[in-house]
Length: 515
View (cartoon, rainbow, N blue to C red):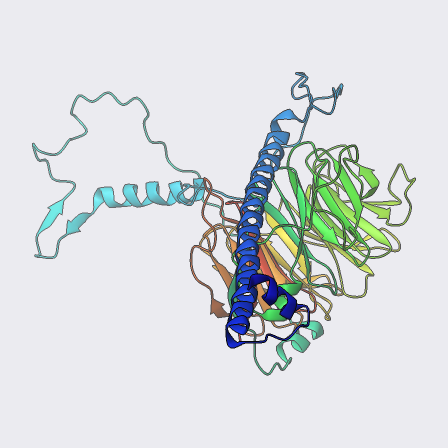
């Protein structure tokens, strides 16, 4: 019967009902055998896939551990002691002079002025009486056995001396200029709201700086682990949904010690570090693997700008790169010249140490902030300083330019931010007590009205600069604290509805415009 069923399958018709049934059973058995065989093969392939995924995760963990160990293995001679590196021995004849740029101060530090106030109050109350809520009084001049009198035998090791005359607070002059009037007259239908989209967790130490590609959804970050990472936000922009986990497109290495700042143009990526080097990198290709192959440690680097001390800030356009160095020099380099050994121009203010640089919208003026709190403005073409705005005595952390007006905004360590007119060289307004701790970073949205400020009080605030009022007080504790540091940087995308912040907890948080 079975052979007859086979004949039917080959085209011979069955002669009886029983033959037809046998033929159907034979066909069904063949199909069932194929189905069972397919399920066995599927289970085998799934098991192999899980094994490969587990191996891939283990490799990623190993690579991250190697990245973490780079800080300890990179060699530099500090205070005359030479350290060995896996990349070879690095020798230098000079001691390292740089110190970490201070980004936080104790909240309850008693300054000399405050101490004098307390002593004056105590001395003034020595001849007065204390009045309680029940109407009773204590006369401080009356002789009481329970109160120490001047005749009592007391050894005074550190007698209190009369306080020195207290200095008056430095007055700050404000000017109402035409550019500031234009800012106040700007009309915007609605300021953006922001929602958290995805945390980026690939860095192994505090994130120091964030930059965006001028047009594409690409984010560039650097951290104290000495690495810089490029992230692709295209999927986030397209789907507008939060993502749980995302890996970087590529990780760039090479700095000996902490990477301090980044900059991004249409064609180049720039990173700077405490080793005094500024590296220029090309963008990786779309099919480039996120980890570089063996034997090519720096496949994207095309240029290196060397400095004599730590570099704290970088800004760039398609033609020039500006760097702020701890030796007090702001340098201008040609972006396309790969053979230059020295900067094309230098911008120096005597005895001032720069902390940040930025260009105005026209690219004709260079804005520089200093550790003294002063704010300098230079003519890029001539290299001369057009004005120096005196500070309030507190260090200026960062300076940025308005996207289309000749205005600059500076973040200051006393928890305030200052607005200045670039062409007039004058301070036009101050927002005091913007944060309860150091204002570490500021960023202007492309609408020209919304200003984002970040602070070590763990908060990010969105301001309407026309009124100097808070528009959005974002959720507290955006980043976890490490010692006294919380948020190092905040940045808007120049064109797309993206904003990002980097913190001491080694996390980059990406925000997208709320619907």
